[in-house]
Amino acid sequence: MEHLKPWFQIALPVVISINIFFLSFIALIAFAESSLTLEHQRIISVSINTITLGLMTSFLSILFGTFFAVLTTYYDFPLKKIISIALVLPITFPLYVYAFIFVGGLEYSGGIATWIRSFDIEIGSPRNILSGAIIFSLCVYPYIYLFTKSRLSNISFSIFLASKSLGNSNVRTIFKVILPLVKPAIIAGAILAFFEVIADFGGVKVLQIQTLTTEIYTTWYGLQDFIGGARLSIVLFVIAMAVLILEKVSQNQKSLSLNSADKIIPIKSRYAIFQTILSIVFLLIALVGPLVQLLAWIDISNFLSSLRTAYLANSLVLGVICAFIILIFGLLISMGYKLAASSSLIYQFSLIGYAVPGTVIAVGLMLVLDSFFGMSITLFGITGLIVCLVIRFLPIGYRYFSTALDQIPKNNTHVLALHNLKPWSAFKSGYLGFLKRPFMFGFLFITIECMKEQPATILLRPSGFETLSTQVYNFTTEGQWELAANPSLVLVIISTLLAIILVTESKQNK
Image 1: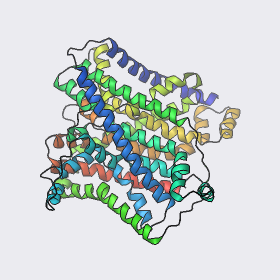
Image 2: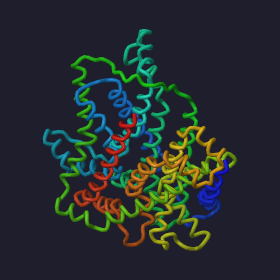
Image 3: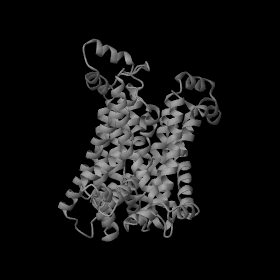
Image 4: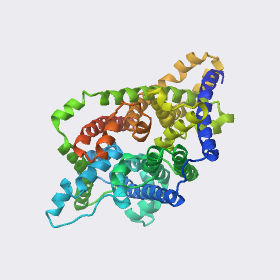
């Protein structure tokens, strides 16, 4: 199709540049010599911590997310609509914010720990892998909840009734028939939860869990060993790629999808009340408790003044600029990819950024520029950080547009090809209408993701450039929970508004 060729030609240099960056980074690590010798036992230890924390969090998130997805899809109980939306909201807390809220509340002098001790009950320190996995899972389980609930809504209730007619109970039907059909959605959500955890820096720092991200930062800045830090980042890169490959393999299994009959399983009133109580108790722990603790730390006068600081402005400007660039490149690549059958591997490799933690990309940019040009990327000021965030979140922009393009009837593109329209005319008449909504929602989502990104921002920010996420890091490092609450609440409020918009809009589109 001639009208797509210019898109392919413009996108290809962007794709090749990103590929060159990743390949150069890997090659430099393979042949460069480190000024210090990192202990293999230490590398193995932090790698095991990283994988263990990620897997434990994913497992607990699957339990929470799948349970409530089934509960709110197939059962009716009081307050169901409100609870269904509220179950999404813990994801609006950045992981590092969620971590310091629980640590600040559960440490010996914290408000929650003090209240629990009033009942002569002693609790241990939350600074360990098990506690970290529980805390993180309460924040990231909505990935599984949203993906699974969406998939369940597309499965015909007649399948459920057919299983019941064969003598299976409700629970047996759910476990033996329904859940296998939504396994791809559960896995996809679990993979996202895993990536969030292994990419986190501020949260594990507060929890005092030694992971690859904290070790990279220590090696890079504490020991001034750039090659050593880069090699550690490659370990993180390999872990991310291994998980991504496993996801691809698992997603090759086809699942059945039919039109929903929009019915529910009848249950007795006392069980319905129990389901409501259970959901409320869970939300008190996962949403209400952290929010109340955050608000308890807020000084209203300081909070209002913090809205006028440069931190919020810097975060917004950074997020908006990155979102705009990402969506432009995402549109170019998604349009060009339709003609990229012979270059599909090159395209796919350039879109692994979201699976790669921001720490790895930041370290990679530092190393590549220093090795080839003898300069630091920090010399470019905010531009270096923007480049890092664009590479990191480009797959999100691509995914928004590619999903929309897949929904365009093939007849439409064939008609455009037959009329031999010029590229811009063909785009306006055949594609633009399908891409307006993805652009709007992609812009909102990516802006927030860039504002929340912490490790890459800490590593690449220009001197004196502070954002909401770096302010949270600065205060939590010193254990100043009250001061960290101000920028944290701003991030939570912005993220909550986005979540409400997305959930409301998705319900209207069903």
